[in-house]
Structure formats: structure tokens, C-alpha cells
Image 1: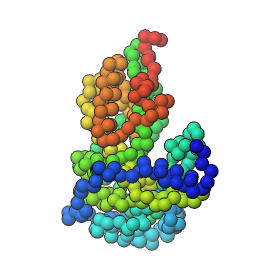
Image 2: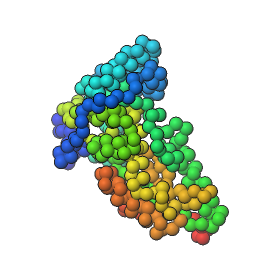
Image 3: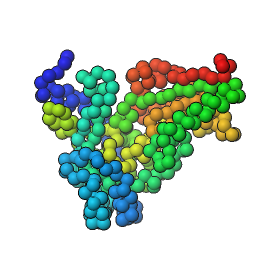
Image 4: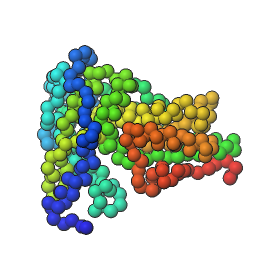
Length: 335
């Protein structure tokens, strides 16, 4: 049924926002404070954070644009360092730094369906720059992951696939690809699973505690053309706009691939003595093998590990890997 009344439209967006609510059967299970703290925030880290924020971005409720901080330069650095240091030591965050304003932007298909919109989050710019740590402090990602990494991008992965297919033709080898698309991957990250993964990945307890307390009690509202909805609690998903969010998702995705055993798998493409089973760009993953059976085995392992941490495949048949096992072509003998 088409909605025309302003209140009905806002209520529908409020219902759609249930996607971000925490599972009542999955309560938080962590301590609030860590006694062993990491070294204090450095001035150079704040400068780095300021320089990494994109300009011409809308601000949230505080109305402070990032350009103001960049204009104030050293004064802004000192102020943000002081605020960040207080959060760093107390491991607590002001409630206004936990608030986001969601802006629905049409993405595809029927614009009367909320699921066809991309929700862009507006947050306090001061909060975006007070993330617990620089992404450079998080290591352990393989070179097959090109998402959100300096000097790498989707074009690199496309070029790699093109090169592999060309070599397949040259040496008359069959190559099979499977392109995986997860449904709302960032929005469905389970927080308790994420904290467990960070611990297993060797992230310091202090940084994990800061992140847990930042995500605890988060609130959001949806801004529509008819006004904003009521504030609601966010219980899952990664915060848009935070410097560390992309790195956190990379770790989340890496956990899936490690547990699926892709690094040790015998399937894959042999290149210069190395076995390559996948290429990744954030949540977009390409599996590859030299036979259908090998590709199926890789796919089954990834599917099982994805379900364990509640990452679901896309239901759109144009992208979903489970309805299209082989969104791929076969090169070699077919010419």
C-alpha cells in the first residue's frame, strides 16, 4: 500500500529501522573498564585524523563542519586531543557522540521500498576524529584484501581477474569464479561477535573496551522529507563515518575467510607457486578455482562460516551467490 501521510511515512521508516536493533536474546557480555591502558593519544595522531576526513560533508546535530577544525589548525588539534584523551582514559563517551542521523538515499529499483535506499549516517565530526586508534595500528590483513587500504582499490582486483583469465586462455586452463554479495553487510555486524573477533585477532583490550563503550547505547533517527522519526536504539552494525569502521569490517570479513580455511585450501589458482583462492574488496569477495567441485567446496566453507557470525547473503537473485552458484564464465577448451 502506498503511503501519503507524513506520519505514516515516518512510522514506516521507524519500522524499517528495526533492522539495526539488538537481538534481545543476545545481551552484551563484557566488562566496562580496563585497568591496563595503551599509551596516550599523540598530537600527530589527531593531525592525521583531521587530514583523513573528507571535506564538504554534512554534519550531524552539532552543526560543526570538518572545515572549521581544519581552519583552526593547531588550536583544533589541541582541543580534539584533550577531548579524545578524556575519552581514552575514562573509556566512556558522551551520549551526543553516540547519536547518528540517517539520511535515506535512493539506490535502486522501486523508491517506495525502504530496502531500496542506502541510509547515509551523519555524525558529529569531532566524534569521527576521536576514534580510538588509527587504522594503521591494526595489522594482520592479507594482500588479497584491497578494501579501505591505501594504494589499493577495486581496479586492482579487476585487473588481477583479467590477468588470470588471460593466462587461463593462454595455457588452456579452465577457471571458475564465484562473486559473493552479502546483504547489508555493514549494518548486520553482530557486536558481541565483533568483540570476540578483535580479541582473537590480538587487538589490545583497551581499544576493544573503548569501542564497546562507544557502541553501547547508540541512538539514531531517520530524517525524511516529512521530518525526523523518533530516536531509536542501535544494537548492531558498524557506525558510518568513523575512521575505524572500515578496518573493523575488514577484520570481521577476514575472520570468516580464516575460519573457512581458504589460506590452507588445496583448491584455487596456482600462480608462481602460490595458491590463490580469493580476491576481496571489503565485503565483496570473489572465489576462484580450476574446477566446479573445488569452487563448490570453497563456497560451502565460506557459507557455513558466514552463517556462524550471522552474515547473510543477498536475497537479490542478480547478486546472491546461493541462488547463482556460478556467476562466472569458463575459459579454456571452449575457446
